[in-house]
Length: 385
Ligand SMILES: Cc1cc2nc3c(=O)[nH]c(=O)nc-3n(C[C@H](O)[C@H](O)[C@H](O)COP(=O)(O)OP(=O)(O)OC[C@H]3O[C@@H](n4cnc5c(N)ncnc54)[C@H](O)[C@@H]3O)c2cc1C
Image (cartoon, rainbow, N blue to C red):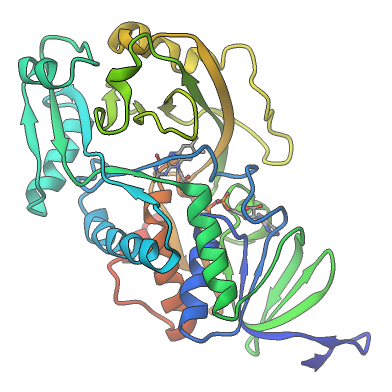
């Protein structure tokens, strides 16, 4: 403890983590297990359904169409997910296989093949007849193909955050829910963080504020665009075709840089989940329309009509979530450009959850040792210079 200006004592930590969502909860876990004195601060509940990490499932893929440089990080992420399942005693990762459909030279097939070949990943290329025979759920154009990879599947995001928070707390971390961070500063001696309840000091600071990152991180020099995203659940006309064990996670190329994707049905959430991976309407995280709006269903209904007719049944529910888009759609994981003691993880652009296990490890490495041996340098701010 040290005395602050008003004479009260100020708690002192090795690291303060702001935002206990996907990335922050993982960072707290990795730091606490290495013996750091950690304080995690969250403005809402831990976990909550108000940021980017709710809706029961998140896809994980290894043959990453976005760029082959992600694959080594993904390999480490998978190993850490397996460890987390053992440590928490919870089922968090379902390896269902993944099925990606599109033209042979489209982004999703071309990009997935590039990653699979460069990193020698198990995969199969299916022509349309083989696709129709094995996966009659999908009716795609004649000239399309599909790539199947056995390692893909999905994670349970709410259970992941709960597991990380619980393990971090048991390892000695202090986590505070419902305590928004209002301001912070850093100098050569340390960092100071002011919340709605108190003031804290630490040696290092990690920002994992998700859609609120732009509010808190000054001088980043990069614009983060927050968008409103819709998830839908429908009751299929032929539910047996969409059951867990029968259906892999899947994605359909739209040939415009966007995809539709979805998951097998789970027994604790009714219906077949489908969504459009494309930046939605720009929004403000404090004012986003969280209730479904007219037109929301049309973000996913046409793909059911056109290519998955056996799933084109009644709507059951919709949920709203947010993406934090970086200018190039790739993550931002780096030291703050002006503050050596501050590390930033943001701009996950709608595809970051599967990496949360390894991002937490990278953040802990940087906060504790100044650098990481994990291959994450391609996500640095330098690429925008
Ligand atoms: C609809 C949708 C579908 C997605 N599908 C996939 C998928 O299939 N696969 C995949 O890999 N990724 C997917 N993603 C992306 C993935 O979910 C996100 O990249 C990831 O969850 C982001 O985690 P985060 O920790 O950055 O943000 P969050 O989990 O939102 O955490 C940020 C936290 O910071 C807190 N916070 C912010 N400001 C403050 C403050 N001032 N004080 C205290 N706390 C603060 C917030 O309350 C929040 O809890 C999807 C995202 C959405 C929205």
